[in-house]
Image (tube, rainbow, N blue to C red):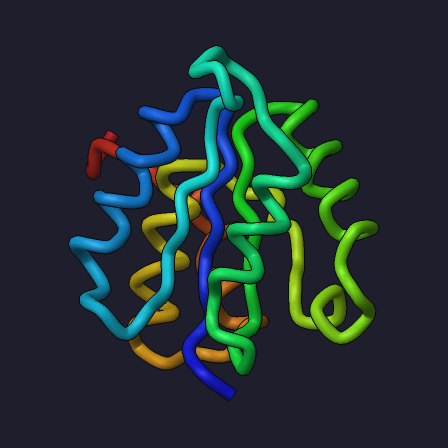
Length: 135
C-alpha cells in the first residue's frame, strides 16, 4: 500500500487550495493531496462528483482520507462514497477533525509513512492542541 492520500473538501475553492498548499509544503511529493472546493460557476459549495474525481485522482493503492469544512460538505463526501465502486469505497474514510490543523497533522503523519489509522489519530488529536504554548 502507498502513502495515505488526502482530499481537502471546502465550500471555498481558495480555502481548499490553501490548505492543500500548506499541507503539501510539509510532506513533499510522497503524499497525494487534492483540493476540492467551490462549484463549477466559482460560487461557494461542494460537489459529490468533484469529490469522486479527487478520490480517483489519488493513487489506486493508497488509502484516502476526506477532510471537510462544514455540514453539507460532509453530506457530499457521503454521497461521493455512494457513487464509487466497493473497492474504492473500502479505501476511503471521512475524517471528523479540524480542516486546517487536522489536514496538516495528517499530511505530516502520512509523509512519515504512518498507517491510515495513525494518520487519522494524528488528525483528530489536532482538535485539542493549543495553538499558543504555555497558555
